[in-house]
Image 1 (spheres, helix red, strand yellow):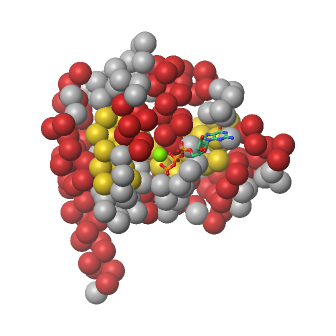
Image 2 (image 1 turned 135 degrees about the vertical axis):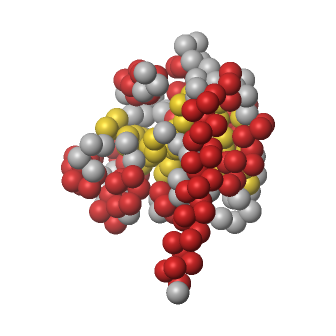
Length: 214
Ligand SMILES: Nc1nc2c(ncn2[C@@H]2O[C@H](COP(=O)(O)OP(=O)(O)OP(=O)(O)O)[C@@H](O)[C@H]2O)c(=O)[nH]1
Ligand SMILES: [Mg+2]
């Protein structure tokens, strides 16, 4: 019985995700669902990415957090359209939450919409929101055991950004193990090693991201 209920919730979510996807396609906007644990560096990556890509692409952002508008304020300072969703306790965004804010986003004017999911290494991977692709940020500070302990998000993502490589000299993290374990879970995963603090690796990431739409 419990399994049946969960299945129905996911089916209802998938139907709304399809609706969202249709609206994104009609508007011609490419949509990324960006996931990762609290503090991995999702908003920092967005700030860096916006600075790199703003001259070439029209970007928009939807921020998902349990409470507060800190992340939306950080993005708003860069002068791109942003909407903050507060889940009020839920540890992930779902398709309905996205559906409810779509009228507030100038979708037709955008090339790329990035949705920053609630900081969590598990739940966001279970819910489609209508995105073209899922991507994730994992910081080296989280430890090299994370891919094997939290496999779903690695399996669901098209790209993995290994962030905070500037901290490697101070950590016992084996970044090669992180990479290899992630690739064992998902051989198609595109992996970028970056530092939002120093800017290392950001060119390559931004170039790849901007090429996805075509
Ligand atoms: N050393 C270092 N710190 C970083 C880097 N990227 C982000 N940080 C710091 O990590 C902290 C968390 O960064 P955020 O970008 O807010 O992380 P987030 O994933 O958006 O966090 P939530 O939205 O709360 O899930 C901040 O203090 C950042 O300055 C990095 O490459 N190196
Ligand atoms: Mg954030």
